[in-house]
Image 1 (cartoon, rainbow, N blue to C red):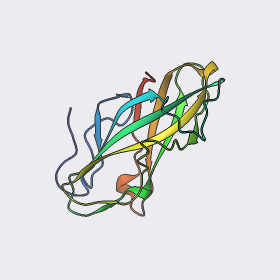
Image 2: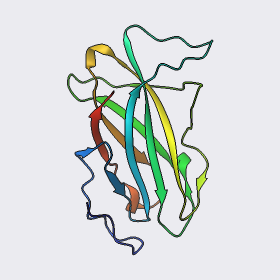
Image 3: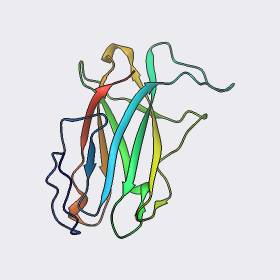
Image 4: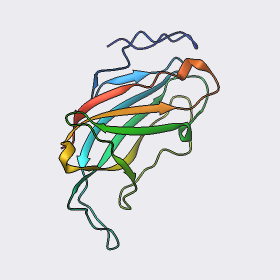
Length: 151
């Protein structure tokens, strides 16, 4: 898979849609994102309980800053839609093992973060995960879409 040019501000050669879980997408400033997996969540704490009508799951994202400047992970957000019968997942936060998209990522550093969701069972387990990024510059306005199955 091709990635973006090392020159900051150069457009990415990589496709931004139809990416499989495990594939990487790099923005022109060097921030690279990979949707590692979407996995059914079962590690409830004493104050949480599953919704019998929903598939509750955790997405793991690998982020790597291959650029020259720190990146604010708070500028990232994740949207999840059902890929078979429609539907949108509701965001959630499960206590155990949560690593939300927050803080800054220094150049040359990578991290694995999580995004928790619930999708009504009637929408199936095939999902499209869109990683959005807020920015004042247009070079990061591409929002990559990853397709996979909640396991």
